[in-house]
Length: 185
Image (cartoon, rainbow, N blue to C red; front, side, top):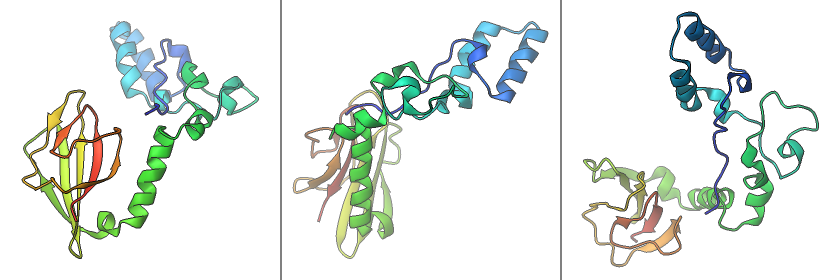
């Protein structure tokens, strides 16, 4: 699956416009704080990293503006942009569209009774939704490692409704960052 927009990871304080960040930077300078550590920290904490201009296409300024944007465009805009996502059937954008369509179609996902499964497993979020005899199982691996969700359910006849890997396993084993929705009947 192709990747969606990422944080910019600005390296210089001049790249930032967020006033709390700029004020804290000045404060750290005034007190002799560790500027290198501060700069490393704000790559993850400052909202500007995630508020760069939207990457519409691979043209100048990512197609966002013919003028100068208030923040630098993420340098990866030539490969990660809406136009590229639109033409890739396996893109994050098109996966999200399929997910929205499934949610609209499968009212069990919206109104079904919710049962949390494998609650003690910190690597997965696993739950069952049930409505009018229909059961849908959602399995999500939030780690970069393969994991197994202990559902306590018979998955032998499960049907994959949506997954982010070409061939999801039907035994609770999840690949890194795998997400799958199964129809249990």
